[in-house]
Image 1 (cartoon, one colour):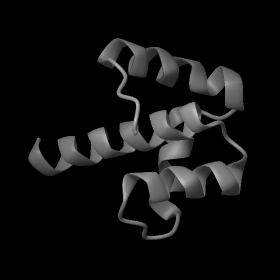
Image 2 (tube, rainbow, N blue to C red):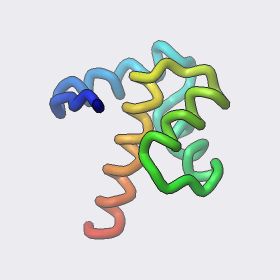
Image 3 (cartoon, one colour):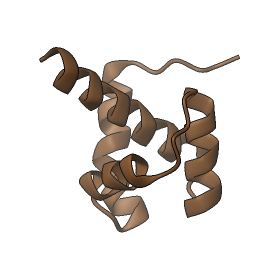
Image 4 (cartoon, rainbow, N blue to C red):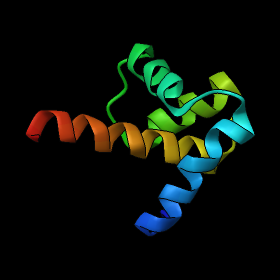
Length: 76
């Protein structure tokens, strides 16, 4: 069962990423873009967690932000 967060919770998590990881969100988004060509959301989250030792919440927030920005570019 997945846990859905509100948009405000997501924004709060994204705002804390640089403080908790030492890397800017834009840097994480490039990392995802340069990473393996995984399709499923949970596969991307698992890869990011394993490869970069992030918490589940951090990885999920980064992948969600990546998907939001990718969709905005495609439809925007």
